[in-house]
Length: 462
Ligand code: GDP
Ligand code: ZN
Image (cartoon, rainbow, N blue to C red; front, side, top):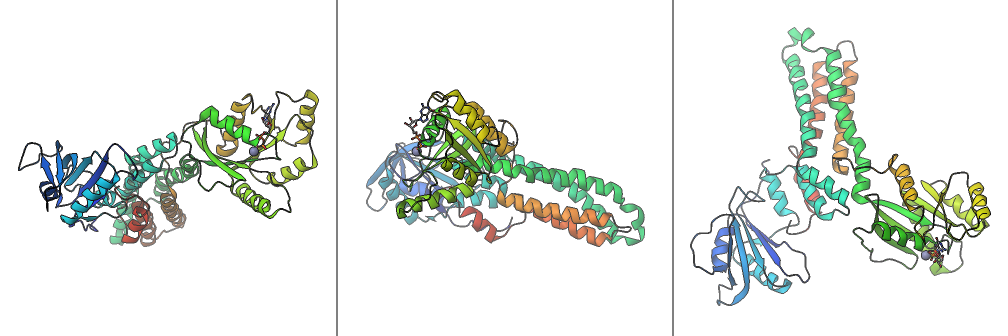
């Protein structure tokens, strides 16, 4: 791409704020080496830094010679660097304040502060990675589960791009034939064999595109996790179940700030699937304003949930309240669990079994019984099959939209091919449209706007 505007040198602190044993400052651009000579005094004086070597020494304020920190630095000469420009990395020993001071000196020495994602943007603009890979960098950083991480790594290694490029190759060969027919209309008859072309379009192009589109939903579940709401009247054991599931497979647990007294959210994994478990404090009708707010919130959670686990107390008999709450979840994707089977009398359990028009799962949150059956059922309902590996590749929302546009164009082309004498000019338009949509995914076709949108979601220093 020729949107490159990489004459200037950018710098940022690449490690997150807060205390840490080490902090990294990243500098990329033509001034990187000059900055190294200006601010860094190696233990053994030298005029030349070899590429990809660590040097030990100190950062000095060039104005007064004051030592700022003891550091290691490495210069990665272009093109063998993250951005394909000269990159200087300074590994400082100290905290954020010192890092900020070093960054200030770097900025005074001819660099400017990097925008969010600008290093990765340069890596893209300089052709080291394509756009889908650039997006994977951010996904890698924000991955919330092992499976999300795996997906991101596959995308970073170029697996999605490979698949897209295969399809593009096929499209390009078809387009070449169609364009020949446009250019040499006299010889048209045998240049295009409509039936054969339709078969390639359907099987070699449309099918792989649609397969990728279909993997979006599953990919999204693995990336973002599943929102699972625990519903049921007070004291049936919602919090206990939440804790039991967290104990079973506690993974990357992120307590969500702003947790209200009524809705508690935690992330666990159910069979490798990241799950946001949301414990609602009942969904009762109430006069109390504060509680009513909580109930409104719980209802909202219920409506946006991917799955509701409706919990009842097996030691009790069904009540009117159970029935009313059940009616609220029955329209949603849900499963029913009868809890406390460790202390529930047998005849209560059979009453519950008859109470629900569906087959409940019997569990004890306290003793952990029935939880694997519960997990299996969660999988069946949400993914439509038992616990399994995440898809190897799956597009993100932007990529899926482009794939869908490509699929539409291919379908229109197929429609044309069904006509008695398809016009090559019209066919060419559709094939080009499909190609251009696919090229947006890898970034051969792109705009500043799109790049801004993608890279503004990155953190500074990436
Ligand atoms: P919530 O109001 O729905 O969140 O219910 P809690 O999780 O706070 O549980 C209410 C009470 O039921 C607590 O005293 C729990 O110890 C108890 N409890 C929850 N699950 C079980 C279970 O499976 N067996 C038994 N025996 N007690 C349970
Ligand atoms: Zn509770």
